[in-house]
Amino acid sequence: MAGSLERRWPSTVADDELRLQWEFLSFLRTTVVNKVAGLDATLAAATPLPTSPFMSLGGIVRHLTAVERFWLSIVGGGSDLPSLWVKEDVHAEWRLDGRDTPSGLVAAYREEWLRSERALAHRTADDRAARSVDGKDYTVRWLLGHVIQETARHVGHMDVLREMADGARGE
Picture (spheres, rainbow, N blue to C red):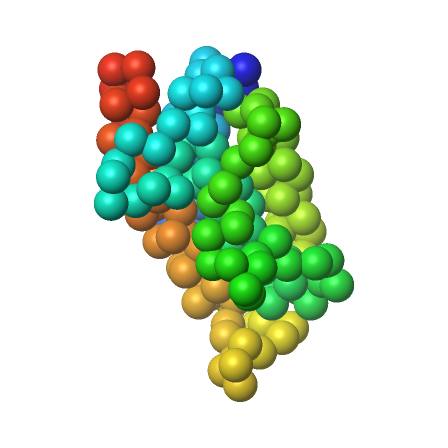
């Protein structure tokens, strides 16, 4: 089972835009980890929403791992790592198998954080991403904003899924 992490709100006297974005992303990442803390593999893999048959707590962790790898490491930093997305199957990264455990999914997610941070370590908010996507260029500012909004959106889903799984509620 995955354990919980201590969350820290970003500084309220923000004087550096890029640092503030990283701090908000860190806060959200920690929230993701805490939403699966203490769950067994069965509860983490549950898909209780009939209209979203692939959405599970574990699937969201796997999806956010793919989001970070693609947008921050591959696009932002130019890494040659393979994408975790499968073009032929838009739901591939959401599917879990019998080997997936909350702790394993969290470990992979946390490893991706380190890759993402290394990929953009010496970049400024105004710097262009190392790669374009479909002919579009992106700034580091945009990439971080996108990953923040994607993570926040799925944290909201995780709130509902966790409450449905075992009644746990929290920030």
